[in-house]
Image (cartoon, rainbow over all chains, first blue to last red; front, side):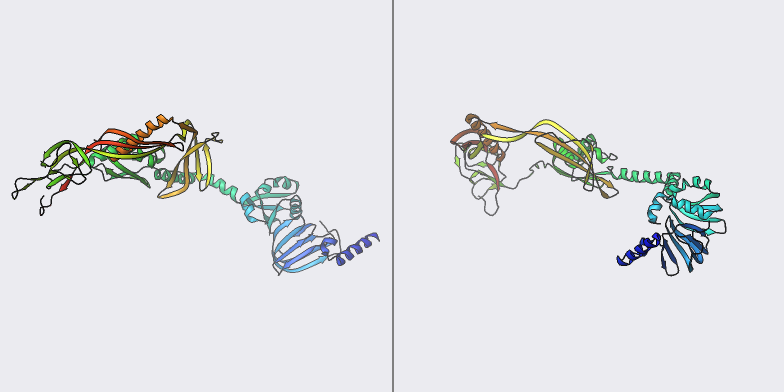
Length: 100
Length: 397
């Protein structure tokens, strides 16, 4: 109940005070530039990386990006810049915590 | 990737990692703050990425903990360039030596040109220059500057009236004006001698001509002294009258001399400073510290450094700082009078020929006013008053 309350307060604050949701609620921020770039902030680590697929761990669930000829342009503890031809960005929330 | 130029500066390497758990390995690296970029996958078990040279040195430690093997593929950036430069240092040294040689040769004296001098004088000048060290093949740095050379040449060689020294690139151009010895008068046109001043004649030495006046005569300016025409009326023969007519002339001079004069004298203490001027920035090389002299005069000798024909904005400065002190000279009235008289004499002598004699001087008027001695002096001078005056044939005198 308490968690739900805090969640609600955060949500309310984000709404009322015009704060970005990702800062308040620890969500990933995904910026895409066309099909060629994806910039993901606030991830929790790299799970899998091939030139067709990138799997990232989030706070809740995982993020799966599919496409072609992927290159990680930059990788920092909480940020990643992916370059390539992006086809799909998929949220996977069935198994929170992820598999390693 | 934040700033690839910085990475270029520090050096970067391409790392090839192969093995299992590559993603975990990457996570470990990023979490420990190692910069990684351009991650690419090659096949199932290999990835390559770029990283900083600094970080690459520690990567083995991480690799040992995981089951990945590491190879470095490519090294780029300044540290590696530098290493290669060292390996090929022969080129660098060659270039440096080349520059140095050109520098050196641009600052060497390559020629001395003397214009306007007779061969004998030229020889003398060359000898004198040799003595000063101005020779072909010497470095300009260690030679006197242009003004110095000019001064020394004019002082040491009697035949020179004036010498202009100019440094043009690597060549000294000397423009010489020799003292013109008076030409011997071979054959003079018929002339009379006339007086150039009002005078009383004292002595006469007539070599040629008919004298018109005599000793103790009073002559006016322009008066005929010695006539160049001989013979009787109608059959006159014209010659060039020649000789000396010494007359007593009079000059008046007015001198003012302050009793108290203030001027500066050097104490003999001096300080030398050497520095290099880069554009407008002066870098001291030798002789630091402030000058502790209360009053001083600075003499600056600037040498430009040449590169081929250009002057570089680099120059070498040699400063000499000389201490001076104020000095007050005071005369008593008698002394002042004496000195004023001397001054007047010197003054007069400047206007006179060298062989003129001051026979007598008389102080006409003496005032001491406002700390000044004012003298009016009358000089009696014996000088040659004869000057040639051509006789025109149409109107023989």
